Amino acid sequence: ALCNPDWVFLSCGSGEVFDDVVAYAVEHGYHGAENLSIIPGEVGASAVQNIGAYGVEAKDIIYKVEAVEIATGRVVVFDNADCEYSYRQSKFKHEWKDKYLVTHVIYRLQKTFRPDLDYGNIRSALEAKHIAEPTAQQLRDVIIEIREAKLPDPKVLGNAGSFFMNPIVEKAKYEELAALYPGMPHYTIDESHEKIPAGWMIDQCGWKGKSLGRAGVHDKQALVLVNRGGATGEEIVKLCETIQEDVKQKFGIEIHPEVNVK
Image 1 (cartoon, rainbow, N blue to C red):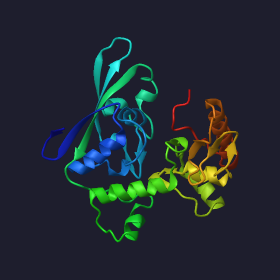
Image 2: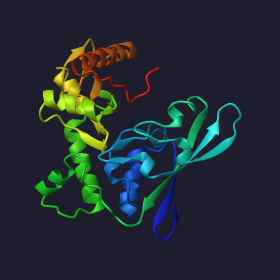
Image 3: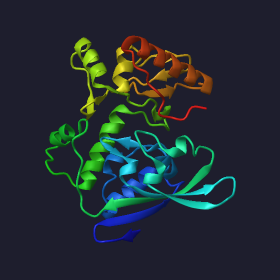
Image 4: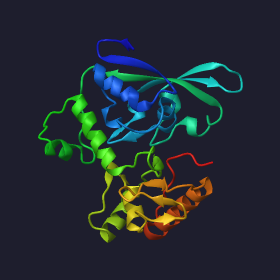
């Protein structure tokens, strides 16, 4: 780790378990990754996918990405801006796909703890524990508890975490749906756009806990598709496409996979 008065720059190999990096950072007083606790996967995937949870995305802490150009073996280093990060997107998922192999990610973390508590039910979970001003470790622990309560352990039930991206829609579309579904959850992106939870729409379509063949939808979080035992890739894709069609018919919104589907 390299340090300056305000920041720590942590260089991590792409094969490191991402949550091990978060745990290490919290333990050593390097801040900014707490809300990303217990997301499954490796460091390299954080840079490709721009993983995110509870109001924080990998792009918020990524400083540089080191990669090898597959065709030539040339080592290249990309700045954060080069990667063109957006919601669960990067150039590594599109024009750089199959062109580069990520070898290292350098994260820029803060020495001062400035917790982000305003997304989802983080504050209420802390309040239930009578914690008004959490430490970084307390915030990480609460995030882990929230995620474990609703997301299946991949070691127990095969899954890839959140399967679909939450769609961002025009304000007019949101208002149309809000009139039909009072209390519909949403997150304001800007004055013209709202994000609607894909899991809520999938649940409204009756898919939570249901199966199609050996693939199914998790009974606690409809955003997660699970392998109930022996499901093939084709079965997962068929379930994905069936859910997409049901959501489009009911809400007039297209939802897209967060995972890479080949």
